[in-house]
Image (cartoon, rainbow, N blue to C red; front, side, top):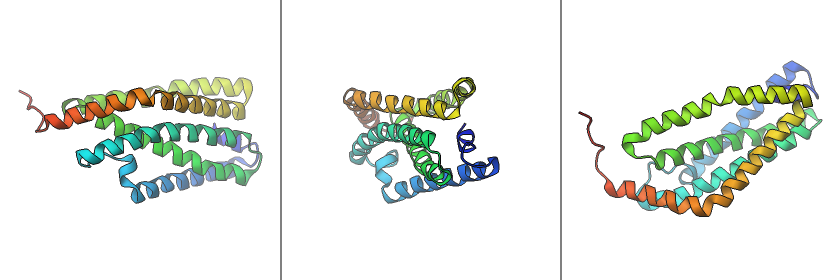
Length: 194
């Protein structure tokens, strides 16, 4: 879908190369962000006092990165310049990876040890299993309304999702922190299976 939007301002080969390069730059920026501030996204390996701070920041990152991803997609969809479009893919890749890492970390941190594998299996199944349906919907919308409109609509949906998540933070944050603290207080190794 992003390549189709790029093809409105360049050739298909240039579009493919630019999409791959610029998203990779955004991914490396996310890696650099984690290297400089490891406790802001990944809180699983830290002590309990830092875990609560990391959870607060991680939940905030989910909302901010979802909205940032959506805004980047919206700007990208309206761009008619090849280099501007290529540059806008940097924040797209950055926010996409920050959101995925923060969501993954929060789900693992809030899952009991004995259920973490199952929870992550369901999360992965939903994440990967719903994507083909989204691609089908995006393809149908792009055929009817055009690729730029479809990418912009996806960006609007991400911004709305980020706003809804941010509005629900006051309810979700204390529950998540209580859950993590309760799991840490039980301590010890998970029970052995018979």
